[in-house]
Amino acid sequence: MHARHVFVSSLFLLFLLALCLVAILPPRGSPPPGSFFQPWLPPISSGSGTEHDNAGSECDYSDGRWVRDDDAGVTAYTEDCPFLDPGFQCMRNGRRDDSFRYWRWRPHRCRLPKFNATEMLERSRNGRIVFAGDSIGRNQWESMVCMLAGASPAGASRVYEQSGKPISRHKGYLSMVFADYNLSVEYYRAPMVVMVDRLPTNVTSDDGGSVRGAIRLDVLPRHANRWAGADVLLLNTGHWWNVHKTAKAGNYFMVGNRLNKSMDIKEAFRLSLETVKDWELRSAQFSKSYFFFRSYSPSHYSNGTWNTGGSCAGQQDPLTTATTTDYFGEEYSWINAMIAKTTEGIRTHGRKAWFLNITHMTELRPDGHPSRHREPGTPLDAPEDCSHWCLPGLPDAWNEVLYAHLVSIGYDTRRKHK
Image (cartoon, rainbow, N blue to C red; front, side, top):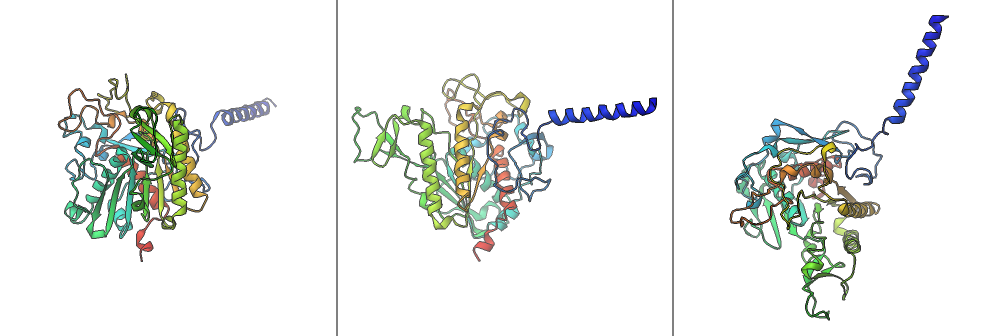
């Protein structure tokens, strides 16, 4: 009897322990503590959400951590890639440590496939890949161009700008042609996605000339007609949606012929995304396109902002979720929430649209910026660059996530253009 009582008591204790574990463990799929955007963002897909350890199923690539990988330093391209802005060539500009290149993004519950540039070129034959957005979007475009050029059979010699434009910072657009694949990879400068323009002549201002320009919330940039028909369109915006680029610069919001000097930035941003959404849904050319809207790329200024002496110098390792400080600032989380809602709204109309969430993985990388290692000729007292990214570098991982999505959803322009 004594042995039986001991056995029953042991079973009862095990049962209580199991109940305790169920109570304290988070539900399957919950974000790790401190994962900045995970608690409120909608899923990337409206599918079942089940996740498996393979690249071909639904996966939340945004939820993970950076792991040291000595092989990661063997990048698909080097700073010798002829399509890089001088400002992104950090080692050439004096950076002594290359530690920022030796990290690989590892999602928590699935595998992120390595970017296969040869396969991406083959899948993109006779196609167009278009990036439109601000200069950080150009960061990502240059990364994509250089990764693909490194796998081109003839190298960069068969990759050229369609109109013969020099690869340098300028307003407008660039279209890189991969001749062996009849593929163009294009970048359009659209820092606010909608049109930033001079004040129209039929609009008057009674404030003595303080209005320099208009951010036309219901009009897309003039070159937006070139975006249409892209096989893959990736938009980004966010860094210009602040008082420094709007009211303090004399740029005010405008809808129709009405200039509004008191409109809230959040409301203006919402209206701009409605314009993007309506345009995408109206255009028959997008019926077979893959539409992505990338999330906000955090800056990492500490001890000040970009214009008050803020710095990211000396950072050599990624942060962990547990050590993340609030570099990003929750006041900008609304940008991601609105972008996610917009892409989900487009999806509900049967379009192929996705929110490309790279914010959390980017928040953990204060080590990847040019910092003081800016392009030659930059004044010594110029602000540090803690917004853009060294290349090769972090934007390569963004393109890996983009590539993983495209492969998992069957992207292949060869079928479309038969």
